[in-house]
Image 1 (cartoon, rainbow, N blue to C red):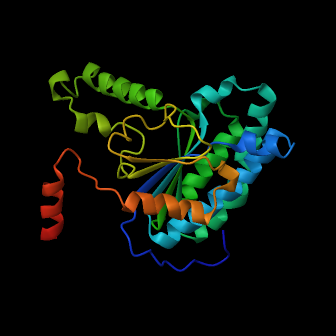
Image 2: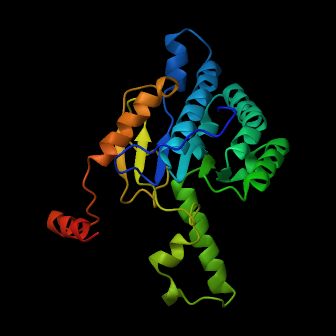
Length: 255
């Protein structure tokens, strides 16, 4: 990220408040260049930095990226170890700059499988940036949408067992409050790079009304023009949330 606070010049179009991204294609990017897979992941960190800069510039409130899924533990042990090392070094290098730009850093997912040093760095990053408000940057690591819903249901069940809550009181709104990202607006725009067109167990509850944008661009090649194209696609869509186009038009006319 740049050394000084970037100017915030939001484009003259409707921008998403919250963007969620599956950063796919790092391994293929490296393979095309006959480089080790970890080189693709390192190049992908630069793309994260570019997108963060644009979110700050456009006034986007939240950015959530899928860094490591619960299924990614199935990858070769050496690659998983290198990814853990990259996660640790990226936190150490980037957090101070993010803090200077008033960015709040959060990590969601089950941290218990991470090395102790990484868990400590995560906690330090969250403490340091907890009061920042320009942008909430959330990293989903050892995260899965099914895990998220399951842990929320488990916590609700524990409240029922303790007599703090009756089963009949459980509602969508109450369950949502126990999910990761409960304090953020649900994602308006979901981007997946690398050509795949699926959500891969990412934010299953939160993506219910999100606009999807898929691109063949591999994540390390996802540049500022790519992000702008995604936001332009979002701005051109009519978001009805179950209403008719006529209702949406009347509401917009009344504003």
